[in-house]
Length: 294
Image (cartoon, rainbow, N blue to C red):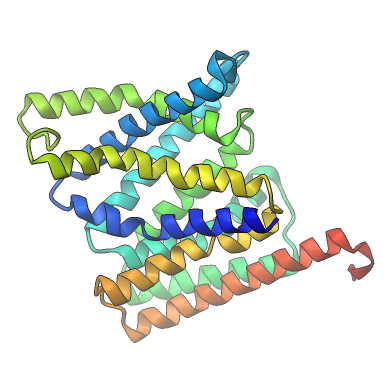
């Protein structure tokens, strides 16, 4: 299990430091960054899947399953766009808020869509998160729409993926395959209009754009290795490494403003996260030791 934990820590640490990478594209339009991320991710994923599984990876895929992956592709594409845009707009702190509340949004979506029942601590956690977001809305004067957009897009993506038949690697390959045609078409239009960054702004930018695909699949492979070796309850705790690193980078390295009123709202959300984590550990203990159940 220890190797799986380290794989998980590595994956979430890399995801947490992503703002440092995407900030290198501050002069490149977000849509071009997204399109290159899709194209190069697909090429790398397709090469890996072809080498490991070959054509058998997608054999017998039904039309219904393909529809699931089409919806997943739209959601992950939207999530990637919002994240890169937020980072380059100087909103790393708000993106971290989105990923702090994502697990709670996932639980809420499970209740709405699958009629799942919440445990008492889960109800408290969701209520605290809602209170924190409401407080931030009042202090900002508007909804933290970027954080909510990230949380709902990724939470919905996870919800859709629960019904998907393929493994995580094959699934992401299919999703990027569905996005690669419009992404490539967009890049060709940008090139025709002489607005393309790739091959026009220097070797450094070209390598960074290609590298966007590689840094996308690297932590994914580490994450896949982690979930195969450790219980999901532990993975659920590890996932907070990423937004914590993002938050610290935003405040202390990138110098984004973080006022006392923001701290209060975040503190309420962090309390919700702690309650949610405690509930997850408690639920796992009960599964392992039923005699501990109340």
